[in-house]
Image 1 (cartoon, one colour):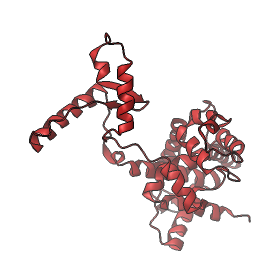
Image 2 (cartoon, rainbow, N blue to C red):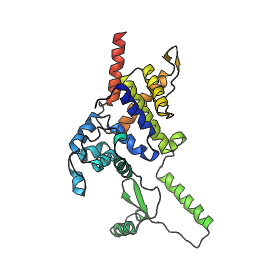
Image 3 (cartoon, rainbow, N blue to C red):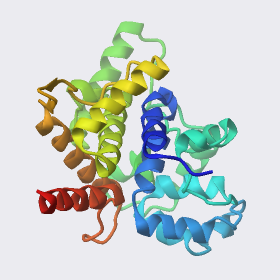
Image 4 (tube, rainbow, N blue to C red):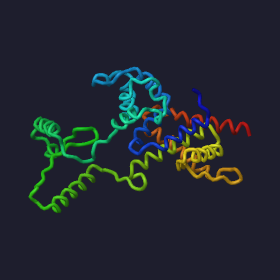
Length: 287
C-alpha cells in the first residue's frame, strides 16, 4: 500500500511519541535507517539466525558490529525478519521493540560482584606474577568498559562513616579514571535521545518539503492527533517562517550525530541529508 507525503511525515512525527525506555534503541535503529551501508548489511542479515556464540562470527555481523555494536546486537536479535531495518521503529511489534530495548539495557554503574565474577577475579590474580606492581591486584580489568575491583568494608563501623569513606574512595577513583560529568539538559539520557530524534525527524521532513509546508504539517499533526509535538519554532510572518536558522541547526546536528554514532566512510552522508541538499539545489535553479 503506497503512502503519500503527509502520511510519511505523520509516521516520522510518530517517532517523537516513543516511550522513554525505548528511546536509546529507537535512536540507533532510526539513524541506522539513514545509512546505505548499514541497510545493505541488514539485508544480508535478514534471513540469518543468531542464537549461538558461533553465529555472531557469520558475515556480515562482524562488519556491522564494527560500525556500531549496539545496532548490530539489536538487528541480530530481531533476525530472521523480512525487510530488516526498512520498517520504522513504530511499526515493529511490541515484542520486537521490547527485545530490542532489553538488549541495550546498560550495565548498572555500581553493583556487587557475583560469585562467578569473584571466582574469575581470583583466578586472574593467582596467575599474575607476584613481582608485578601491587595495584594490579587491586584493579583488574574484566570488561572493556568496566572493572571488577576488590574492596573491603568494616560493617562494624557506623553507617555515616562507611558512607563517608566509600564516597571519598569513589571520588578518588572518578578522578583517577578521568570520568567526565554530563551537565545541563543532557544529564538526563532521555532528554539527549529526545533531542537526537527531534533533529532526525526535522531532517526527514525538510528532505521532502519546504519549511513553510513542514510547519503546516506539524500543526496539522497536532490538530489531528492531539499530541503536543514541537520540533522548532513554527511561527509564520507574512506566510514566511521566522526561525529557519533553528531548523537548519537541527539538521546539521542530526548529520553530526549520524557521523558520531557510526564508523562509516567519511564520505557517507545520511540519506535524508542528501535529499535535503538536492532539494535546496533544485529550489535555487527554479528561482
